[in-house]
Image (cartoon, rainbow, N blue to C red; front, side):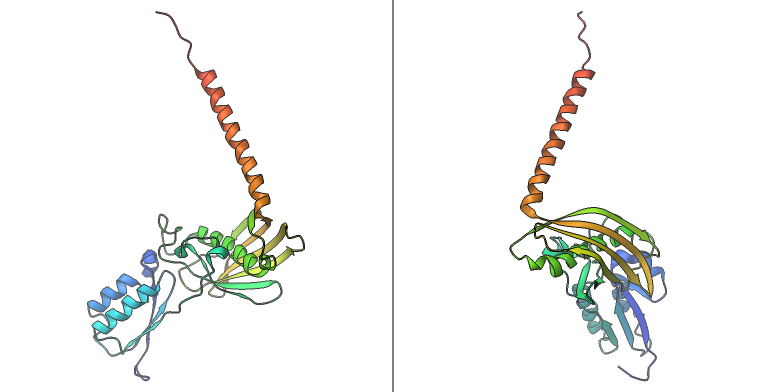
Length: 265
């Protein structure tokens, strides 16, 4: 790649974020591959630096590299794709990795933790709701939920390795301050309270913020408790039984009241 040639920089996003590609210098994976095939980048010798944003998978990066090599652009393409270390299934409480939003989790201080937001192109929250250029607010809410779970599992609950915890949200409020777009973003967890002495019940309060382009996109305040799993599962089962019995009883009452009277012919 020539050091003297003018560098052209593009931002690559997943196909799910086609709306964001209305911005100049933003292309989806499919768009970029198609443009390479059409010769858009072949008419001059400028190097092309491509920075991967949200929704770009390792498989997508391989497709882009392979297409560039096939079309003779391999020596001019600088694809900046950085694999992330996703939070584990037991930390994010997600079975499918495409639904995990937290990556590169780290501790920055006694009460401060941060992570990289990672939005997969096939994340469950995008499959039936993606309009405009921004990422919908529920992604910020779910990222906050996964962040408090991951921080609690990795850095707090681990002190009781013989326990399995069930997390119950007591309150959760999110203020949306700026649009979130499918580019780099950071999730920050600020611990306000962490009561860890009773292994049967760990209690927490935290602020979780989402930052992008030197601005805060959202702020979530949450209080939650981690209960020893056998204790809360028994309580959950009892309350579930009550809900079933109440619903069945009400259904039976409605049938009795609404049953029309039989009239002889």
